[in-house]
Amino acid sequence: MPLTRPSTSPSLLRDPVFRRLWATVELSFLGGFVHVVASAWLISLMSDNATMVALTQTAYGLPMVIFSIFAGAMADTYDRRKTMIWALGFSIFASALLAVAAGFGLLGSWSTLTLLFLVGIGVAIFTPSWQASLGTIVDRDRLGEAVSLHNMGANVMRTVGPALGGFLVTFTSATFTFLVGAFSYLPALIVLIFWKPQTTPVGSTRESVTSAVGAGIRFLAASPAIQPIFLRVFCFSTSAISVMALLPLIVRDQFGGDATDYGILFGAFGLGAILGGFAQGLLRHRYDSEWMLRRAFLINAAAIAVLAVTNNFVVGLLATGLAGSCWLMSHSLQNTTLQLATPRWMVGRMVSICLTATFLGISAGSWLWGVVTEYSGTEFALTVSAIAMSLTWLLALRFPLPETRNLILEPMEKHDLSIVPTLIEPQAGPVQIMVEHRVAEGQLPEFHRLMGLRRRHLIQLGARHWTLLDPLDGGTWWIESFQFPTWADYQRLLQRRTTETVSLREEIRAVQYGKVDPVMRRFMIRGAGPARDALMPRL
Image (cartoon, rainbow, N blue to C red; front, side, top):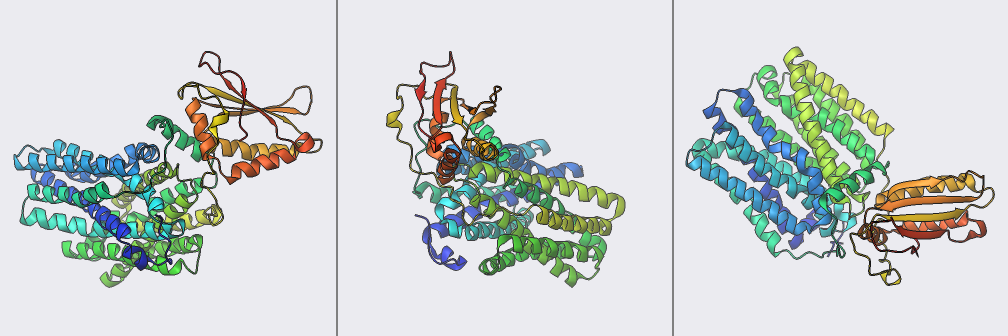
């Protein structure tokens, strides 16, 4: 059942179901960071090629870019719990292969990167299902807190993981370190196996992953309200990653420090992220997400600018901590807004696209600031990064977050399918919908406005090839046409209808001649199936 207690993070953590899931899932992210450190150390012993060592980060993070959208489609079309179980099992298997191969001395540079890439695939498939599941574990009003707690936990693992990996690989062996990483996935796997969440029936036929990916892209294209979120996430990640990407050079060149100083600043970033999560929980009750985000962008820009000019280690420590706080708050708030603005049956795909935008920004920013530093130095690179972060603030002013407080995205009661033909095969199609509108005199401008909203809404629900036919004879009859690939896709639209569907239908009825419902007909395109022309239930 969703949690409905008063909105405070401590009470959320006191719930045993959420606490078990959250603690074990966040622990599972430890394994990836341990693997990256152990792999980089192992490759450094086998090769003097610095590029091969640096590729360990790419090998682990690249699957998130390549497979995230498909993982999001799986999160929306398959049982999320089972998807997470299989993904964790795959990561454990790949981690075990790393440990065994290291133990028998079979690892080379490329084989290490390949197996690390396989571990990353498991994480990439797991993450969208986990983040999409947060909205079913907790109530809608608690989603922001759940996302913030997840990001806090992930940042703790990001801080602890490399330190633990470095300690283990130094004082034990790469084999033992890989085994520790593999065992970090087991608690989450066990908890998920025994977790019995409430599930929503997916219908008689399941949408294929490739079809779900296409539907997700079309949904995003028809959703102008949420599109700026992805641009903001990409721009923020590109600008903000300069701190972590250049941190070793900042310590060496500006502070004259060593590896210990680097570890302290690295920990300050993680600690700042944790404190930022607590600050977000306190501020959420007084300010909206947009207010907090815009100030986080400005504070982050100021922190990066301070790092660009200071040679004082303590000042740099504080600036790095502030950057960590802004990192967590920005990603948490934008992720939460995205989930609140997206229907549950689509949220896995939108979260996965957001993750892709994040990792693309991180990858692009890491490369960009590295190149700028190589030619102009860390001070100049950080200064440009601070300016870029300020531009992200301007971007937020131009493209604000969508309003989510009054959105009702849950599907209405399912359509009574008993009144439509039942002998049609689910995969028969394409299905063509023709709607005949007789527009009342003087209502044509309003009709065109409503058709624009109708087109966007139907595409979000799964319709394709929406067109509006204009009568050449100047008459009052207009034909609205759209398709579905299969009969099952049409049934899914009926099951996804919301109050917006009904509201649009009523507004469209008001501009019809005689204020009656337009005539709606359903066809099976010739040669695609045995269905006959029949009246279709109202949308």
